[in-house]
Image 1 (cartoon, rainbow over the protein chains, first blue to last red):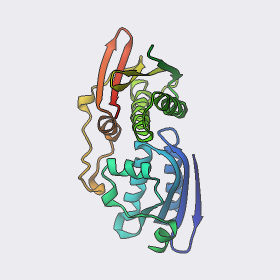
Image 2: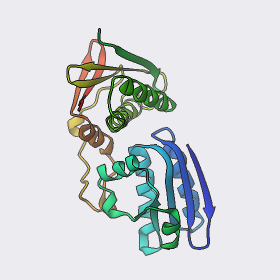
Image 3: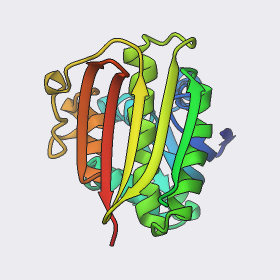
Image 4: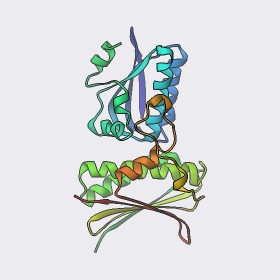
Length: 111
Length: 139
């Protein structure tokens, strides 16, 4: 799994590629924490390259979401979910609760 | 003769990728659709992560044996370990209707297994160890 971050004017764009399971989810968790520790709480997650996402990866995303949403200081928004990965969010009941965009540029522009 | 696929790995989290690849390859070889194969891969990943983290308490020196085969109209996957048993009834189902603010962290893996597979059955402390059997009816 690879996680890369780009600091943009109004948010951080985090691209995740590969397999996010219990082995690799801690890396994603750390990458998101590193952003939030800088006081940056507006994050777009580009999931277009994600091949697999299990419950551990979901937990990392939800944890960052909760931290960013605290005191309305920010948000975690998702973009370009492959259809099977969208299915994982549906299965967990998370889809109605987070903002999901068909294109990264729309997610970034929403902030 | 019905082909039975088997894989044995150590209880290291890094082996989840090998298990995933094994399931992806064997489910496709056994004729499951892409979506069915993905569902099985997810359920097996959750089950094996639980074995590593709970049955073996995170220690990498245990073994996990995964088998995959067809039985009548369904795919059968078994996962065997020799670690500590646990009581699946004690794991609360996550409330997927609940807002994320109050959502509890645990239980999502088991919820996925039960939702993605048609049957999830645990047998603990058998002479062969703990065995989890999951099936998926083929369409």
